[in-house]
Amino acid sequence: MIEKIKNVLDRIILISASFLLIILVLGALWQVFSRYVLSNPSTFTNELLGFLLVWTSMLGASYAFGTNQHLALTFIKNKLKGKNEFVITIINDLFIVVFTVLVLIIGGFEAVNITMGQNTPILGISTGLIYSILPISGFLIIFYKLLDIKNYRIPKKVGD
Image: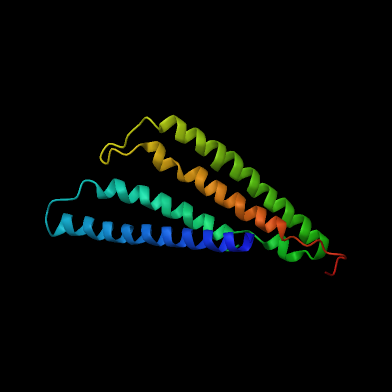
């Protein structure tokens, strides 16, 4: 059941990020076209593209954690085997969880609350809505990390 939820969540993230990426490309093309062909630069695309880039990046990072394809320094972990590798994996995941809770979830909610009453200068969108991707991606990363922790297998001896 949990694996089905993960698969559905993966697809939702991929479809959302893909859709945002298409809008990013089309917006950039429109920006260039309006500036150099029409000689009348679009005023809203620069702000919109900046916000969409943040959303796409955060969704991509969440997906990367879900598929264990995120950027990682593994030189220490690769040198260890068995229980030592297991301990380093647990410590690493605990660092990720603590960082995610403190920065993305708690800090993200604080950023959303502080900026909810502010609007962007060109689009007029609440800045809090833009920052809402921080706690959203934080919860996604925590969900994926909890699934990883659930699948841990403690090695019986050093060679395992």
